[in-house]
Each structure stands twice: as structure tokens, then as C-alpha cells.
Image (cartoon, rainbow, N blue to C red):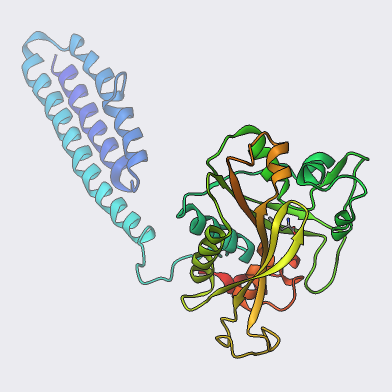
Amino acid sequence: MNDVKQVIEEKITQLKKKIAESIEKVQSSDTLYQIKMKFLGRGGELSEFMKVMKDVPKEDKPTIGAVINALKTWAENEFSNLESTIKQLELKAQYKTEAIDVTMPGLTKPTGAYHPNTLVRRELISIFAGMGFTVFEGPEIENDYYNFTALNTPKDHPARDMQDTFYITEDLLLRTQTSAGQIRVMEKAQPPIKILSPGKVYRSDDDATHSPMFSQMEGLVVDKGITLCDLKGMLDEFARKIFGNGVKTRLRPSYFPFTEPSVEVDVSCFECGGKGCRLCKGTGWIEVLGAGMVNRHVLEGCGVDPDVYSGFAFGMGIERIAMLKYGINNMKLLFEGDTRFLKQFKG
Ligand code: PHE
């Protein structure tokens, strides 16, 4: 009888030693967990050991049971103490490796800048939106009718020579002017009409101040009782907003087939205040856009009664405005995409 008890006690001592040895050098909580499962987990060495209880003689059961329980409690305590020590060490190590140096300079990403054309287009839209204009964008590939015929410029009209046109077919072309948008709007809408039409236009032209592709901003106002004075007043406001408060406008007679009368609009030189300088070539004035009262033939052609309604239209080159506003002397700079030029417009 005593033999069984002795054997079991011996085994318990060994198991205790085994547990103590296997956790002695453990450094990670993962390994510790695996060892814990090996001894204390379901089917682990300790629970297997419990099975020997059935061989223990009845009178020894209480003592042996108590010893086994003591071993279990001891083992549980060992594991949980070690667990918290290891966890703390691991946390410390983690704090060390993941530490953030708040004084380190941040990673900067290079930012772009808006193209001067975009800046001017947006500024123009915002100025005119403030006067009640909405934006209409027409197609860049137009047919002859919208680009010319409906704008009172039928085939063989000498004014077609004012613009060197890129034809795609006999009837299709790359629009030479955003004025084509006027027709598309008037065809669909009845007055009052107040639209802006920005977009790219194309002409076979290429030098320091001309590019085969450039952008225009068209404006059209049609309503009862619209006069040239309305045009002048609105242009004054536009000139002050875009070039500065002291700037005035002046109208000179001109010719466009779709406006009558037609005018060329100058602004007083914002560089010299009108005294004459290099920018205004000594004249005190700078030409900025073409405009006029919508020709009655054009209104009629779009189904707008010219005896009831009148209107004005204007068109300006966005690149030209950008060059004047930012002092850019070569139009090519606006198309080359050189970042040394473009980044100057960061703002
Ligand atoms: N479309 C004309 C041009 O490109 C400009 C313009 C627009 C003139 C509207 C009068 C009215 O030269």
C-alpha cells in the first residue's frame, strides 16, 4: 500500500521539477502558453496524472489528492506570475521598437500647382458667375453650321479667312471659336440667356503669341432691352476684378460677322496706369477681347425674335489674359509643361 503512495509522491516531485525546468528559460509569452498547455491543458501531463488517483488505495486518497491539488495550484501560480512578467518585458520591448520621434521631420509629398490657364479660367468663371452667368460647354469638334454659317458666316464669306481652320471633313472641323456655343444655347433656350462658354479652340497659327490650340471664354447675354451700354458696364466690372481696381475699358470699332456693331475692347494699361510703357507699347491701352451686339440675323436663325430681344456677346483668349495678368512673354511656356515654370503658380 505504502508503495503506491511513495511511487506517486515520487512522480509528483518529478513532475514539479519537470515543470520548473521547462519554464526556467522561457522568454516569450507564446512559448510559455504552449508549455502551459502541455502540462495544464486538456489531456496535458497533469490531467493525465490525475488518472492515477483510481489506483490509489482509499485511505491514501485524501493525502495524495491534496498533494496533486497543491501541485496544480503551484503550477497555475507559476505560469500566471511568469506570464505577467514576460508580458511586461514584451511591452517594454515593443515601446522601444515602435517609439515615435515626434521631432523627426515629416515625409513631404511634392504638391502640384494649377496651370495659369486653369487659374484664369476659374477666376473668369467666378467673376461672371457673380454677375449671374452659368457655364455651357460645347463640343470641340463642330460642324460648319455652328462654327460659321449660323454665325452669319456662310461659305465663301471673306470673314472665314480671318481664321485658318483645321477641317476634318468638308462639314466637320475643329472649332475655331467658342462662339459656336452661342448658337447651341440660343437654339435650345429662350431669353433671358446669360451664359459663359469656356473651351479649347483650334487655328492653324503658330508664333510667340499664337498657338494652334488655345482656349477662349465666350459670353452671351440676350434679353429685352440689352444695349451696348450693358456690355460696357459689365466689361468695366470684369476689367477691375481681373486686372485691378483702377483699370478702365475702351471700345474701338471692329468687325465680326455675327455682331453688329462689333467692337475691340481695350483695358487701360495696369502696368503704367495709362502713361505708356513696354507692355502697352507706349499706347496706354491693351487689347483684351472682341465683342459686339448679336447680329439680328444670328438671333433670327436661332428662333429668337430680334424685334423683341437683343443681346451682346464677347470672346477672349484665356492664354492672352493669363500672359497679361502674370507677365508671361511667350505663349509656348503655357504649353510646354515645364515644371520650373508651372511651380511658380503655386498658391
Ligand atoms: N469669336 C471671336 C474670335 O474668336 C471673338 C468674339 C466673340 C467676337 C463674341 C465678338 C463676339 O475672334
